Image (tube, rainbow, N blue to C red; front, side, top):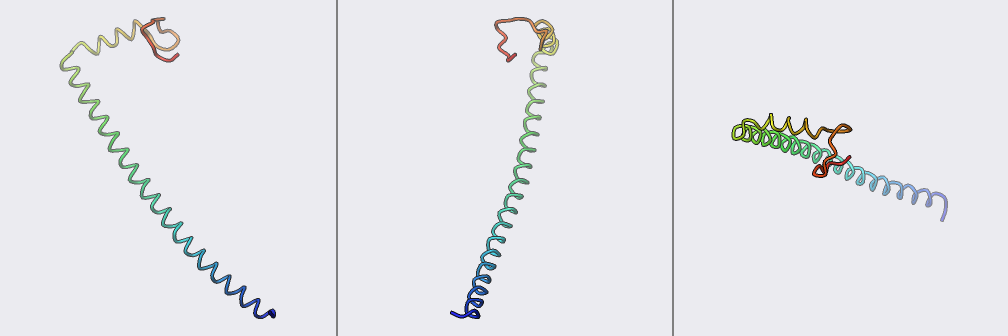
Length: 98
């Protein structure tokens, strides 16, 4: 094989590799776009779930305070008794992490 044939074979191989790189680049761009689309959908889904949880919590609070009008005061009274953090009471029924 002479040098011209080797150069021609190398050029052909370079063209093949460039074509493969273009295909891989197109696939990588498609994957990135799909990932970005998934992130957007996931973000929207999380916002919707967050809104639904907040609305459900508000409905529960409204229902509890409607059925038990003194509940807020009672919760504050219990919190004042058992405390929180370093000053909380040593209560065996309180299983919160320390």
